[in-house]
Image (cartoon, rainbow, N blue to C red; front, side, top):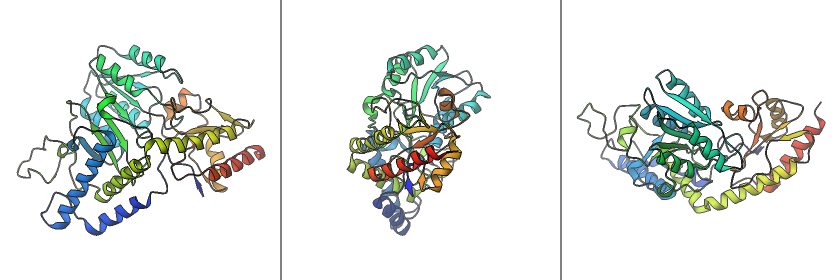
Length: 381
């Protein structure tokens, strides 16, 4: 099997990640709940994971690293913890359902939103589009750093500056960018960074983070035991305990720490360069095929992350992907939990086939995949 579905989850995981998960299960217990050696070692593991996130993303203190179930949970925490009736939000026109479904739910509570148009290859027009969408009730900009369907990047640093110019905050969905694109919370202006642990950070599934960079803190969505101030029925107000009730996913967090360390060792620039070389190889190998439809020019790192989506002219994406799967090529097809991005490119009825390599993907695998894709497209009846 040639695995090219790394935007869904990276596979395989680095050896150090697998070892960290197993080691945690073998040598650590419940953190912060007991004074014995196994519990203390577990607490140290979580603290070291926070320190690793601080180093990678330049967070202003370990207490501002909040571990979540996934990126979706982090986004829900920000939106439902901060937005109130009468608030207005600006989002891009290509947001994942992790943003759009919570906003649709919040509409019943009096929250409104505007979808700003995205102009591929023109960040100036995109920023102006967001500016025109701001009104007197706007409280926040929420946007993806990079589309999980088309790989298109948004100029989040400029959007952060725009938000602050109008007295707003900005929440960024970094599910497709964390671990591939450098993100520096000291300089970016991003107030809330939501991260998936199992994609570009090479951690286990069931891990994510919310990185706080604002004095305005969301209300917690869950209250319960934190191992701190247990005599009180009141939820702790201090971070990170405010948001981390209940027993944490210790082995997942241990694996996430190892994944972040792997990314820092490999260097994000090196990972991105490698993946872009493979995506450009894909693009060049498909661009001359008359039975294949590409939707953008060859991906440019200034405007894309290393993702390529395409379609067979003769078939919908899911039918075509099944044929590729039968020939040993693992890709993602359909709507990718993002109908908004497909509305943007008029592919809502067909979906799209997505190729996304990882640091472990090779040129030989890409060439073999291209051979099968081209053969399947030419022979389609």
